[in-house]
Each structure stands twice: as C-alpha cells, then as structure tokens.
Amino acid sequence: MVSDVLWRSALLVGSGGLVALPLGLALSIWLDRLLQAMPGIPANLRFFVFEPRALLVYIALLAVTMAVAAVYPMWMVARLPISATLRAEVIG
Image (tube, rainbow, N blue to C red; front, side, top):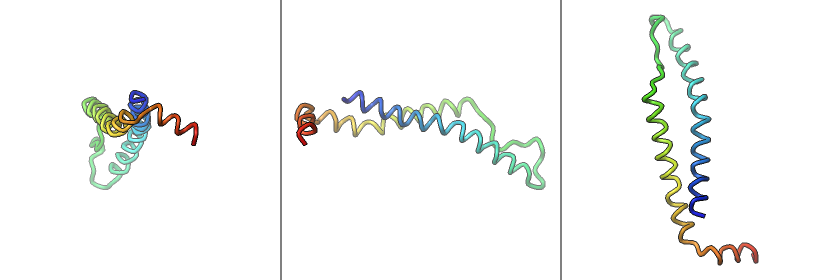
C-alpha cells in the first residue's frame, strides 16, 4: 500500500511536470516575441534562453516535490491496520 501511494504521487507530480514543459516553452516563446516587439529593444536580444542546466534543476525539483508530497500519505497508510480497514470498507 505504501509503494502504491508513492507511485501515485510520482504519477501526479510527473504528469504535471510533463504538461508544464511544453506549456512553459510556448509561454516563453510568446513572451519573448512580445518583449522584442517593444521599441528600442535590439533585434538579437533574447529574454528567455533555454539552458540544459535549468532542465536538470527542474527535474531534481520535481523529484523532491514528489517525495515530499508522498511522505505524509505514506506515513498514514503505513500506520493503518489494513485488514480492519478493508473489512470496514466491505461491511460499511
């Protein structure tokens, strides 16, 4: 049960992280074009530049977020009396 909670947390955080990547890329392209259209801004100036190191930091933060989000639910599940809980679900 505890590993199930961990995997669910990984699925939720991971799917959110995967959705955020293309959304962030699209938003950065749109904002970059908007800012470059301002008067007095040089044509070759870029406001949002992709850096591989930033992607690694993002992935590390997602992993930490997943672990932190799963700690309390995992602790709660580990403390539950599984057989009594399942019996109460069937009877109730």
